[in-house]
Length: 492
Image 1 (cartoon, rainbow, N blue to C red):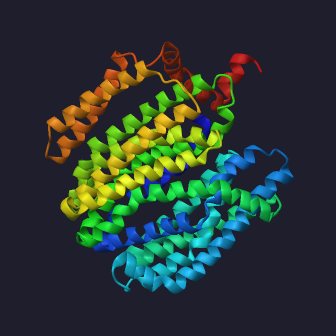
Image 2: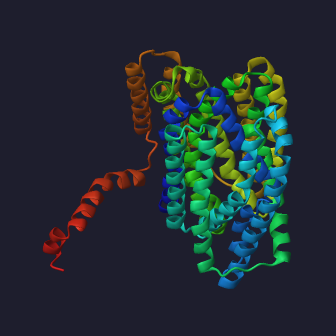
Image 3: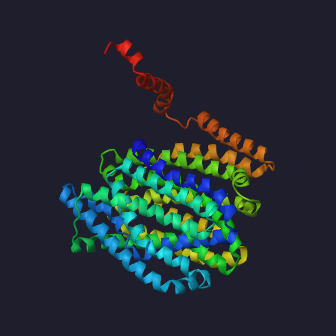
């Protein structure tokens, strides 16, 4: 799991790292209103993918797990690829002509229709990249996945810097860089895929893929409402500058979800095989404990480091984002728990449970949006998101146990809660103002958490042995790279 998810972690963590690199450039050359406009355009792409993309990539894991012959796997991949490409072209054609109406609906003005036309033209590329990415994860082609992800990120970052800092193109510069990155990645991936599996297509199989993916698509729409529905509602009650501040807070808070997705990219594709093992209950319990450890440490780091990070990376106009970060981090921490257990629905071939969890949470979120956003603005939006993920997480944990009973390491999880709860309580009770003090206080709280984990004996004896062996293994690896010392010692 560590090896497989390690490659995905590099790819997925490279994206927020790149985002942080360009954040000073974005906030320098884009006003908060421009930043909010760009964020809405990105959400339109996600909405279109969820509503019209059929989510065929989400069905690859289940259907490829049933097929071992290369010809059968080629048919599954080709059918998903060409089906997604065809749907994407139809969506692009329709969106191009209805862009003014969509602009009026989303932005309350037709002035952004030109931006939307460019976004819609990129939809076929988006669908193709989703299928290729899902296929590489299912077959655990982590090296190719990493290479494609880094290529896309590199082109996007370079294009954004050129478009904003050199050409001063504003929103156009960021959109153009994104499309250039998709082209530079999508074409090589298509060639790579069809060199392994020759192109094939079966319409009956397309219908089966769509039938399995339909509940997952509904689930994705529901999650989108929770994730980004507030972006569409906020401009109707608050100025666009508030949306820009909220988007920056979300960008930082959602970093914890990217940490989870590094693991989820592996887990969601391989859980079908893991669940069939005789020792599956032990593996699931231990894996969940490790996941909670990583998410807890990363979530703490994001919360205690948000104030100094924003002071360093952004202008004072974005300072209001810092108090929102803890709420968003907690929401996506809970979301990670729910996602872990909802994979068990798919193992049992019950994607409808996944959709039900997310739609119930989405309905609660919509009610909370309209109840809280008009009164409290961006604070109401953040709290509504938290409420939704708490409900989704509870349903996911409860219902997944009904379809696939599991065990948890409750004693270790309790120790983790204490070790994290003490420093987090200190963080909120003892505020600091200067930048230097904020950095030192954040580092001290993280060390306190690690100290408490140690004295509470969160680690098992076997894990301690592994930790103690790491320095020796690193020294051995260094000698192995040198070559000569090992040769003299062994005589071989």
